Image 1 (cartoon, rainbow, N blue to C red):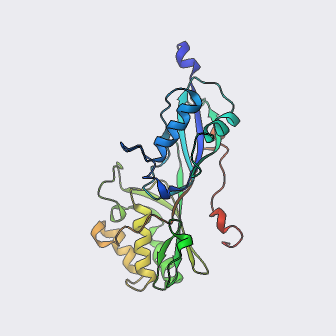
Image 2: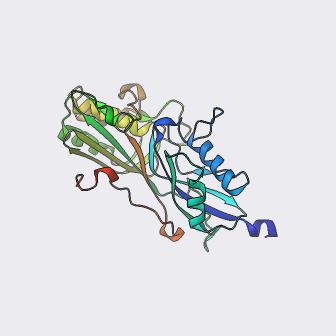
Image 3: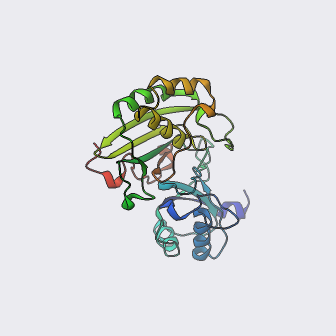
Length: 279
């Protein structure tokens, strides 16, 4: 290994953001994305250009309780310095919650990669179900005015568990190599006028969560019977599922990795602002 390579360090950041005012995570020419702003802040703090790789690209309007990114640098800084130094250059809607230097490779030869080293991902979708929209929740939760039936949606969602071809819930422009994913968990809870959908899977296709939530709403509102969702899944035809639902209530909540990496992950198995009422 040469001296330049020996000096390189791999830094991992836990990033949180309100996606309402951003055009998604991935860098775009207009630069109104989380990645553009984060990399500009990193450049100001480190005085050099640093390219980040994320665990999962989020769309415009989608939030992240815990996005994970990594980058390589020859700078030696403490975890505390990376957090506070970068945050000094970020807008209020974006913050680095933690930082951690990981080895370039483990003893077994594995290298850390924010996307490819992830073992599973968790999303929450927060849905306000009331006859009248709430301006307080605009951009923070989806909204449906027709009454929804929790039990019908829970019954329908059971078919999603396990390993399936999720082509029926895949966006046309999805770049994933395969539509086959393993769904580990689907939970739907009701807290007054709020429904919380929690989905944990090995990985997700583009728009997969929003397309599933939209289809579950069809069932919950009585537009479709519970067995219909299983039929849509089996058919693998995107045109048979519901339209893509609004991004407002979607939160990338948690990325799981092998504990061997020693990441100081925060637990967002629940939405933090529903803590104490979402049991």
